[in-house]
Each structure stands twice: as C-alpha cells, then as structure tokens.
Length: 266
Image 1 (cartoon, rainbow, N blue to C red):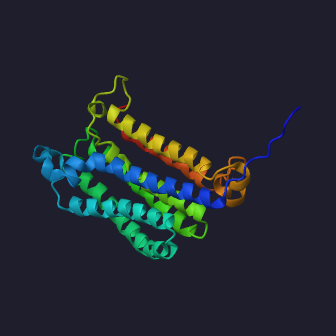
Image 2: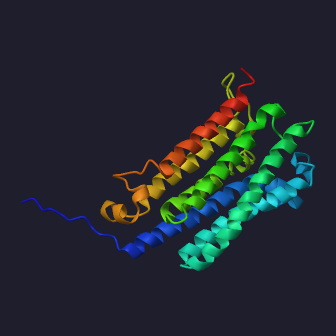
Image 3: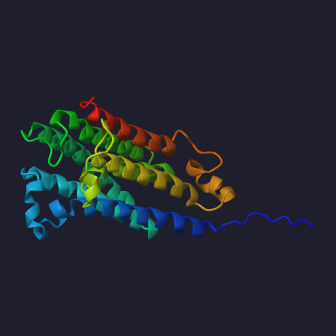
C-alpha cells in the first residue's frame, strides 16, 4: 500500500532564525576574506615591518582603508541587529550607512585615480597603470549600483539585504588579490591569459556570489512556506528582476573588467 506524506511545514520563527544566522555568518566571512588580504599591509602592518614596500606611500590610503573597513564592520553590526530583533537600531544605522557609502564611492574613485597617477603604477600590479584603472573603477561602480538598489528597495527586506551583500562582494576583490598564498602571485601557464592573481580573484569572487546565490535560495526552508514569505528567492519562481540579475551582473562585470584589464597584452 502506498503511503502519501504531506510536506512538513517549518515554523516561520525557525525559518527567520536560520536565514538571519546565515546572513550574519556570511558578513563575517566577507570581513575575514578582506582581513586576510590586508593583514600585512593595513590591519597588522606593525607586525610585518618587512612588508613596507608593498604598502602605498600616500597617507590617503589609511583613510581609505578605515572607511572601507567601517563598511564591513557595519554590515556585521546590521546583520547582528536583525538577528537579535533590534530592527529600530538597524534602521537608524541605515542612515549612517547611506552617508558612508556615498563617501566610499568618492574615496574609491580618488584612490583609483591616485594609483593610476603614481609613476610606479598600482602596488604589486604588473599591469600598466592606465589599463588597470578599469578594475577599481568597475568595482566601485558596482558597489554604488547595488547600494542604490538596496536603498531603493529598503521596504522589501528580501531584496534590500541581498543588494547590500552584493555591494560588499564588489569590494572584496582587492583583499582576495592580496591573500598570502604563493600561487596567487605565480605566472599563468596559459599564454595571453590572466596571471593566477587575477584568475584567483575572479574565481574566489565568483565562488562568493555562487555560494550566496545557492544558500540564499535554501535558507528559507521548504518550498511552500518559502514561496509565501520569500518570493525573491523561491526555488519554483525565481524573480529574475531582483537579486539573480544582480548576481549575473556582478559576475559578468567582474569578468569583463578583468578581460579589459588584460586586453593590452593582446
């Protein structure tokens, strides 16, 4: 005799706790990725005195690093506030985050232009300075785009938080490129292709996006409940006008930036 089992309904409280925990953990992971890359040149620079030649000489970059670190810290704080059900504080800090993002866009553009104007070019970057300029400019443009979409969709919390996470992912490439792993700095065995450093940034960035894409779809429990409370990431009816498009844009723009960056070789 065939026994039919009805789908198990997950309590909505457990769904929200699991989703909020995922976003909090993911924000910490993003910070860790950047911390690992900039530990020797920014966060723990006093511990690595022999690394001074790899640090930009302009004092401006200390301010630049402070503001960008503040954004990563703010993301952790904001996700923690939601996890602890302190929404009113989260919304108040959102105004500070909006102003911080605006300043970061200006600082990011100026940092790129400053690096391109330096006679020696960008630090630890073999690519000619004017060709490489597209990488930081594309990254900061993506950040501005996703933050703007996040602000405009702040009433839709499912879209809002995904846009803010994608905005942060737009910033982590510089940190990943500085991970202290030897293979990142090795030459590519493929002629006329990116060095391992640029390929690793693209691959790691893609993994962050792909992992976020998959986990966010499954973070809200079973399909019936998920379609009711989270239409943006429903596995049966993905809303291609929201964050999946952001994911594709992030991967596409990042790849296009690296291709344009390396086009001078061809």
